[in-house]
Picture 1 (cartoon, protein in one colour):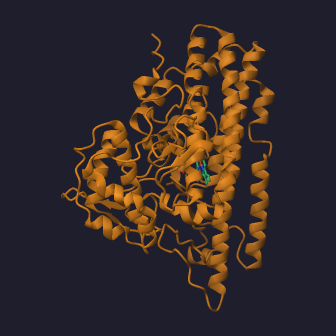
Picture 2 (picture 1 turned 180 degrees about the horizontal axis):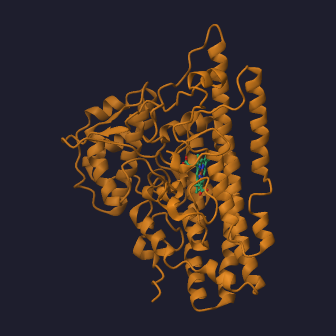
Length: 501
Ligand code: HEM
């Protein structure tokens, strides 16, 4: 018997705005017991700027979660505590290895209630952290505001809000594509085609929304001011957290834990698109149709599901058990309209991933190289200027690099802590998006054999960087650890694999 097509309401999803909560995020917890948390969040940026957040949190009473009643209240509590946790860990000269009971104790409880890990996730930063400017208007980018930020900057607001706007615009694609699944079951090719055509249009709009990131989120602000606070505790030895973070809940059960940081890779919407279109993602570096041994191996995209609220995770599982559109299109190759519509969806999602790669390059790779170049120049200068902001998740890159390293490591090149190269990982995810294409020509076009605009830009930038390194007397091919968002990656542009953690 066929598995039932999931009902959105069973998973708390909205047919209009998808994974965004059906009730607007609360702007304040109603019970006065939590006024102390609210006061901290109201003064959050000032407390971080003055480096007084830790003292204030240390003095907080350990508040129980008894007074949280409704789901919006639990979500607001989680979002506030997640901001406080990351502010506490990263908001000092050195990262704090211990999260104290006033945050740990309630954070563990709210996280367990909501089915999310006790760390800032995409849900706490984006999904449950916005308000519409005008209540009567839709959740479009020009009608959104953020509730909490680390920095108080417009750039940080924009970084979260672009995602919120994408979630809102992409939400209607969920019931639409479940209709497509139903239509495929009923063998109604016209209806499947119609749904796919509308879906392709939505994906195209999402691509346009994504690139609006450039309008108001400056790469420098993102890299140096925002990203450090989003960092997790996994693979963060170089940033000063060799064991992760000790979650001290005030009992004898304090445990060392390691989590990835907050990242849009934790968006259930993008994973829904993959699942419903039958796109499969393999561990990085693995070719198509290889032994199933690797299935057990690390798959970053799959791992990100652990960072989604449990109802969203369960929804994706339920969709996996009914997804049939790819098989339906494959079985109806002679239906040109249907196949074009299916391939168009893949092409649009692939284009979105290509734009995203370009964005990651501009916001992370280029900025990381810039700061490493500066750090090298400073190292050589007879009177090095003091480096700023060394406390907050600024990974200490291996600035010795090149020949000297090879000697000191017996000719073996050093690898970054993550073991996986970021851009190859993202490229593979992009190219896998085109793999199921029905039409052979479309499949070839999307296979990655053709250089995209993002690829060309990254290559040109890499060449310029190699030239710069050469001028400084370093070897061009060097390697260094770098903090992504949820993961930590190395800078190498080839090879690597998620299994090599
Ligand atoms: C300044 C903007 C952005 C930057 C710098 C950025 C950076 C990254 C990084 C570094 C990763 C690798 C995984 C990690 O370390 O977390 C990643 C993955 C990912 N990001 Fe972004 N991201 C940005 C915006 C967005 C937006 C707006 C979305 C859409 C909701 C998004 C969706 C994803 C997805 C789905 C992945 C997983 C890989 C994939 O499925 O292709 N990102 N991003």
